[in-house]
Image 1 (cartoon, rainbow, N blue to C red):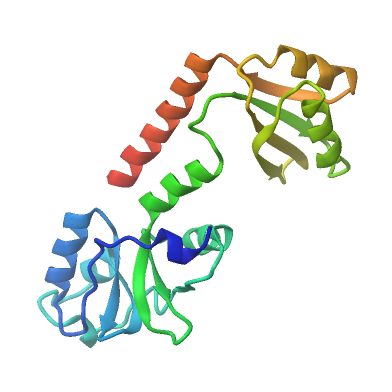
Image 2: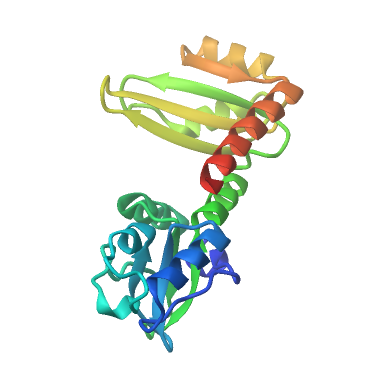
Length: 221
């Protein structure tokens, strides 16, 4: 999935002639903390609510002041993983997207990015989750997939997290089976360290939905 697929149609842009007060009103209306500053189709930068709060005269045009974020953007063909990295690096709620001619073509919101990433990880579909723990990177995804497929199941998505404090790797697997009993036994036979698992469909769906709803409520504040 690329940036062009994530662009939202309802995020407005502001011009350098717009006032800080106007920008702040739009941010409140669209529940974001940033807006792209665009003249015609040229991206000049990103203004944040903190920029406006720091203005001594918020009724003055945005163009009279420096922007703390600057000209941050991604290209239309930027992959979703890199997009997530940019959002995190600059602590953004929106991210401008430019085409190959460096013309502004739209923006991605953090809220939409979270929703699309959840779809990408297949978190909402039926199935179970297994978390395996490793002390190093000496494991084979091919072998793990074979263990699961030998039990007539498939991996829907996977995610690897490295905890640098204790140098432990946690591999989260979403599997297209609600009953993971035989898969858990297979992992035990192959001496895999099973950290945790979720295999009750109702509880799993409730857990995912609760965490997703909590994140959405956080993004709305």
